[in-house]
Image (spheres, rainbow, N blue to C red):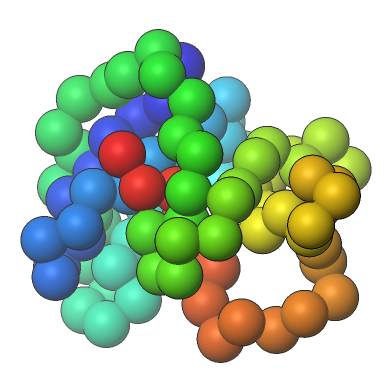
Amino acid sequence: MWLVYRASDGRTIQQPWQDIQDVGTLIDPDSGEDRAMLGWTATAPQQCSGCDTEVSLDPESGSYAHLDEAGNPDRWIDRGHYAEPRT
């Protein structure tokens, strides 16, 4: 299950519900305010909301990561943004 938030620019962003106990709810980096939670979904996100690259839950880090061409988590290329799944 993923919690669904609204970003300040209108995009929706998903967060695995298990993250809540470790990191809390998502914060808007521009304002420092909590993002508005819209609800939840059982559908896993597939693309990054920032660059349309495929993303997946990285079992090593426990967060979303961009995927390389082989479908593996790509932790080495800096794309200038986090892998935030599009809903």
